[in-house]
Length: 240
Image (cartoon, rainbow, N blue to C red; front, side):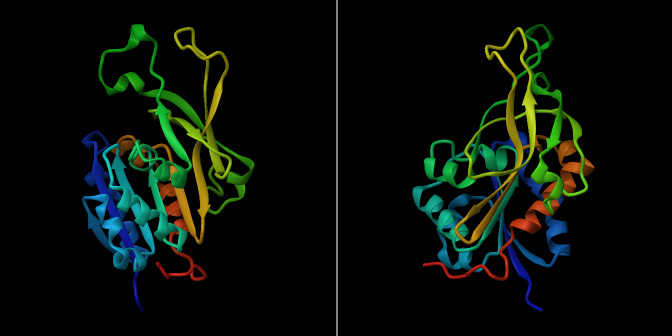
């Protein structure tokens, strides 16, 4: 039996622990029948042969840059049926300057609101807030999130700029606070899928740190999401 091929692309800002974070999920992919290749640069996306042979891309690259050719290669691969998935800044805050990438993903990190200024100490924990991941009606039925109810996290709460092509499985709401400039609660997608040509895209915004990725709800959603995104048997494997 031929294994399916997973390509793990990791790098960017070290604060999201791209090596350790992806290492949490590589054994799962292998146990699920994938042969896993790891690359430390998005420039692998320019290799049409590699991309045509890939069934799933797991990307964990926060910020950083990718060439126009790399983004074009990724878009072409997903359009032809390659699945793309990831979490947090590794997928929703990658290649900020590339509009074509942002359109492919369907959501871009804008901010993560902080605690009250009088509670801030200047480290990452300033942005760790208790919040609820709330399932949508679609989320209650979708295979990625079925059986998982609303759950609480204390970590970065992503405010995401997004569009209506996303199928939103879960949301999170940013409340109004006296020290913030917005005037009403803002609801952002927390988990979504997106169809792009013959391909599937999966994004989960929780995942700032390893303990969040090991949360049973988060881990289950990511594992299911990666399997959902992987190339389907009906998707074309031809890349031009």
